[in-house]
Length: 268
Image 1 (cartoon, rainbow, N blue to C red):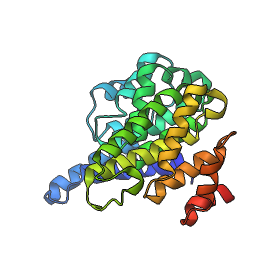
Image 2 (cartoon, one colour):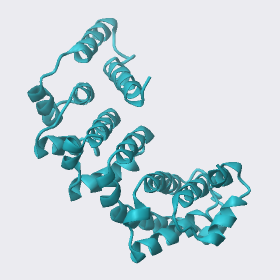
Image 3 (cartoon, one colour):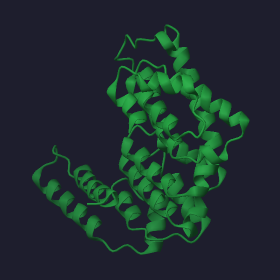
């Protein structure tokens, strides 16, 4: 089963679960199941989908989004972008999957290359639901133009995340032991950094950056390559493995990292 097929199945299953509340009495459960099946089986027209994108509820909107086969105007792409953040997780996931699909086609990818779309895609990459970020990164892999355009704002976003992480740490970042593993604010920032670095790997940084951007990449890798959480070091090593001019000291350091998953990125 493909990535897209798995997501479609999961979204439809989630819609069914969302509509059917276990606290309902039997008659309400039966009515809810009926509504869920109607939504999942409904043949949507494009005009109905666009109307639901703008005005639909959280029950029907995810399935309607998955039924959208094509976009032909900027306003249609904007509706998808507007549903990528600030709404129910099922809607965000469906929107991310559709945006990713449209990014694979040059004729539809063009609608997602404006400043607002790129900024919203960056927010989506770091969504609390990892399926949203994962889907968007699949789209970036297939869109060379976005790989170039997203690089500069992504670097600035990562540097901003790093500054937040430094501020919230009680000790210098290279000594930070993450003593409080239940620190939600810190864990969320680490999560954001993880997915931002994953996205960075799939940008066209080797062919796009100037000296200023190269300096930013080195700042990012020096931080991430020395961070206490091995998953962040692993992502740093992954980015490093793709660099055409990797810094030798950092390369050797991560090749000899104590964690297998980190050094394996550079030994493959």
